[in-house]
Length: 193
Image 1 (cartoon, helix red, strand yellow):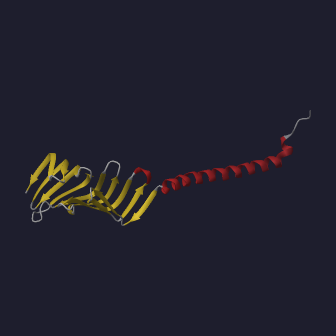
Image 2 (cartoon, rainbow, N blue to C red):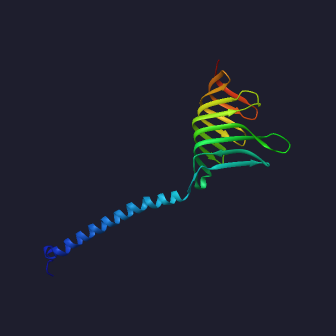
């Protein structure tokens, strides 16, 4: 059996090397480009973006709350809605006809509604205004972060906050505030006048 000399097939080998490198480059660029874009398309298909949305919640024939914002993104199957420039109105029934009246206004730079846990998470310049009675001065709470539990009408303030009524104010941190009972629970308060 005669010995095969590789140099005799040098042109075929060079062509095979060039073709295999081109094929390898094409396959790698196709797989690199398609994998991320496919996952981005799949994740974006679960998103729904809305401009100037208004969301309302009704309980027993009366409006419980209303949330609006400049922009909202619904996060697919997670039952979460991200909002920018959040404005929330909390309603209470006022008479036997179950008409609702605004009692509390909440504003924040950003928010996240978690429908499963019934929480409106707020952060960035959070301001809560509550009118106790028509002629009474409004209660104002300012913080950088807050959680509104809309099933219990309760606000949790995990960060430092300032509570103001008229010329008097309280500074505190880590508090719970019941909107229905107008009751604040905190262990870290400082009264100022």
